[in-house]
Length: 305
Image 1 (cartoon, helix red, strand yellow):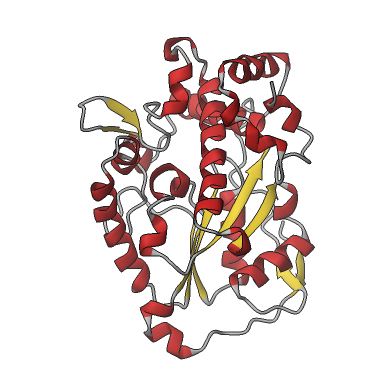
Image 2 (spheres, one colour; image 1 turned 180 degrees about the vertical axis):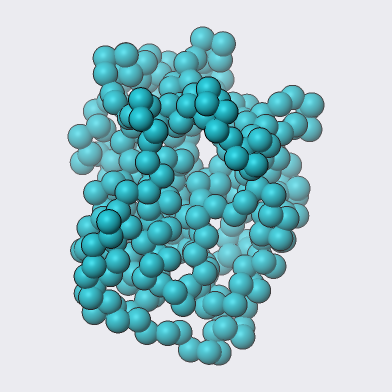
């Protein structure tokens, strides 16, 4: 159940609603199963003057989700193809009818992080970080559960797509054509390890994005789950997106809970699988974890050689 604490809302000037060039956008640097739905729910409850989207539906041609083929195109250097889809996304955002558009999808780092500044120069970003082994465990457990139980709703029935090479790829993950995967024999990787490697790649992209585009001052780092149901963090989140408040907000509580029997539990097996991944990776992929916002986390030592 949501917890309440006081918030006064200050609506944006009407002039912003009429001028798409002044529209602010906020995206998320993160992976799946890291609290993106929880963050989205917090913002929906407390920022009604903003357009808040968790993940655009994959069948929504008006506001593309940026999953699927664009991930493949980004991985294989087909940047003009990604730009063509981003032009549609920008058009949809320009017409959203509110001064601020917020999207918490994990697609950002997977398909268009390095092209986003061309289309959304006024952006801010949330950097949402969860224990990497918990992310890998949660993602692999959820995939196994949905396949075994055949619980895929309509959008999940299209969970694969064909790349330009004719091969089949998962719609919401990296392609495994990315250079980081070249250090491994893919046939020997567990599902857990694939998601862990993906998490490491995405965090390297996040750091590259922040540095390359000088985004540190326009980034709010959140550690999941502790910062997503904290009154203090909620106040900081609302301040960050430009929503006035006086100290009270609706907290989101638990969102997107794990099905019974598929809880995120780490044991010796996961630790050993992590060690194997770390041993095989070039040290350059692990350097970022020696610095903040990672170094102070209790799990950081797991990602050092």
